[in-house]
Length: 144
Image 1 (cartoon, rainbow, N blue to C red):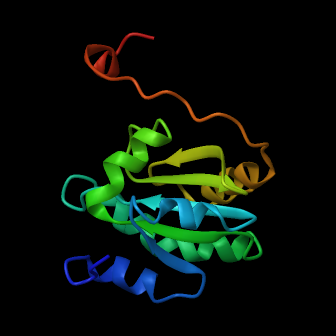
Image 2: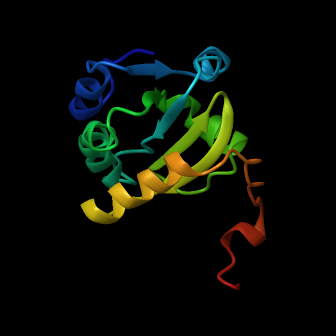
């Protein structure tokens, strides 16, 4: 992953311990690592500026969780493919995996206390099958 075109806050995130760049081709290698991991899908920083906020707080969320997870920053060009794999339709998103298996996704930016609680719940949750992403008119429907 070339870091030249990344926003400075995401470049700084990649300089931290236990934070690795992940592209679609490298995803299987990332998933081979045991334990809890988080795939960070920042989204387009112009369309989803809160992705930059999540990049800032993500290391702090990991610290609040006792360093319990490794972070993979998904390359911008590969985020759509990775998002589809995990049924994600919102950006920014944190996709939690454990031992290579899907756990859950936290989408958007949250207040600190809410974020800490949701990360703790994600780390305590069992693995499961990823949701199926809706495609087409149903994906944009406001009906429940």
